[in-house]
Image (cartoon, rainbow, N blue to C red; front, side, top):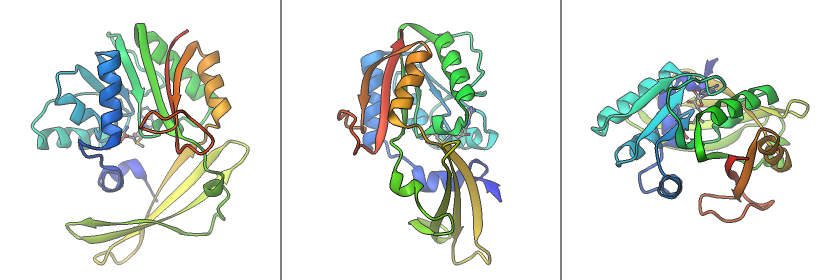
Length: 248
Ligand SMILES: C[S@@+](CC[C@H](N)C(=O)[O-])C[C@H]1O[C@@H](n2cnc3c(N)ncnc32)[C@H](O)[C@@H]1O
């Protein structure tokens, strides 16, 4: 079974963000509000990074997957732009620059499975923020319905067109209540594949009060908590938790 991030093409097939998407517009607004230089942690295939690199913003992307960073390089080449990529762990990076804005998009913080991982990441962010700099984290608002699914039950994620025909993607999830980790298997197949393929990944769930507390006891002050990319105020029904914070 492969790791999802060894299959960057599959990640992009599901998650590609067009330049005019509301997600990209959200990050453009934050950059125009808070300024640059900007650092994106866990930038992956450069969904946001490459589009934002095409503006006059000074922005760097950091990720610890060679495969995802190579995909980001290829995306930048396709779009005739240059992008600054750093291969490092978001829990322990050391750069000789400080930033006006550091953000973690696309639920990537949910790959930090233990409290200690989050604390290490937040400490690294603290060392790299300019005075008055902002830190933005975007994760899911946990869905109790999804976490309560039976581990053997398959759900359709979607059907996606590729050069090799339509890819059908299904998933099953197993949630561990004690660690708050959701173990996710994605199964995919198209007409040219004999066997179904499976990739796996894990996503730690952050419950709303817990996430706020993590910011507050790690030296941050929360300025805004949005429930979606339209900057609506966070509520129980919100799909996302998007926190804008600065050093306390
Ligand atoms: C869900 S993808 C998000 C990519 C991008 N931010 C986006 O929204 O399209 C998560 C990314 O986190 C990266 N990642 C996971 N753990 C990491 C760590 N400890 N340090 C740096 N990157 C990490 C993975 O390699 C992957 O590229």
